[in-house]
Every structure is written in C-alpha cells, then in structure tokens.
Length: 104
Image (cartoon, rainbow, N blue to C red):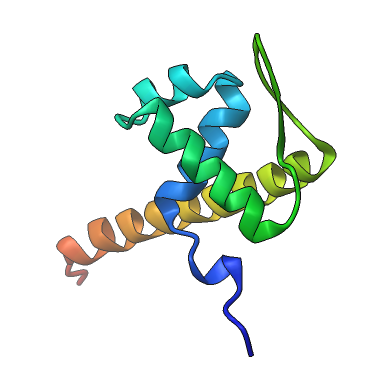
C-alpha cells in the first residue's frame, strides 16, 4: 500500500489551511503563523500535489478556495473542533481529579 497524503498531515498543517481559508492571503497567514510566505506557498503547492487537486485559486488580490479546498477546509474545521473538545474534556478531568471531596 502506498503512502497517503493524510499520513503526512500534521496539526500545524491544519492551522495553515484554516488560516489561508480565513485570511485568503499567503503573506497575512505567514505572518500570523510565524512562518515565511515562500515556505507557506511551497507547503500549499506540495499539499495540492499530494492531494491531486487544486485547493485554492491564486489571484493578484489573494486566494479563493476551490470547491475541493472548501471540502478540505470543512474537514479541517471539524478536526479542530474535535481537538478543542478533547482539550476541554482533559481540563474537566484534570480539575475533577485535582481535589477530592469527602462526604459524610
């Protein structure tokens, strides 16, 4: 079985994708993500190559997600929401496990 692009996705990559969806601008996203615009541009080209689909249309004024990009962005948002829920659950468990109340 060949390696799949999903094997190489990292949580930071999801943040890259979600930032590009929000700003629709490589340089604004690069600044927000503390990375370089050429590095982010290369990452996006590599992702599109791995996926085999164009995810964003490039324009002089910025980026527009394609239908394929919109679908992947929707998945990334769901993954981010699940991670937020996992973090909240861990906080609740940590707080609940920190102190024990003796009754009676």
